[in-house]
Amino acid sequence: MSIECYVYNITNYANPVLYTGVTNDLQRRLYEHKSGKTLGFSVKYYLNRGLVSYCTGAGMNDCIFFVI
Image 1 (tube, rainbow, N blue to C red):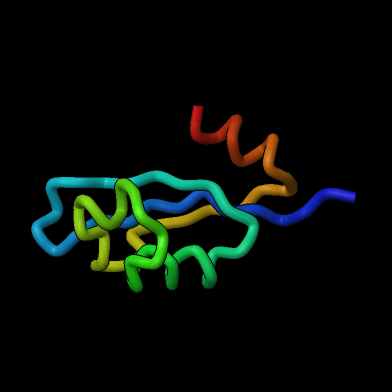
Image 2: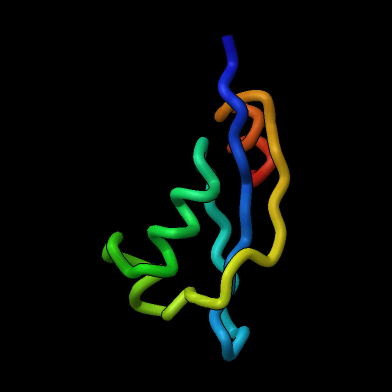
């Protein structure tokens, strides 16, 4: 059984930073980025503009392969 996953891009208001991530719950992950609850890259670069693009895959291996 494969789990649907997402490859997504988000940015900040100034647009100089583009972040690419992989998750199995896109809505939850976007909330984490916007709220700043997860410390790291997204908090450091204020990735709060929201979703730029996303695509789906049949499983994490598909999504990670897509990023590479």
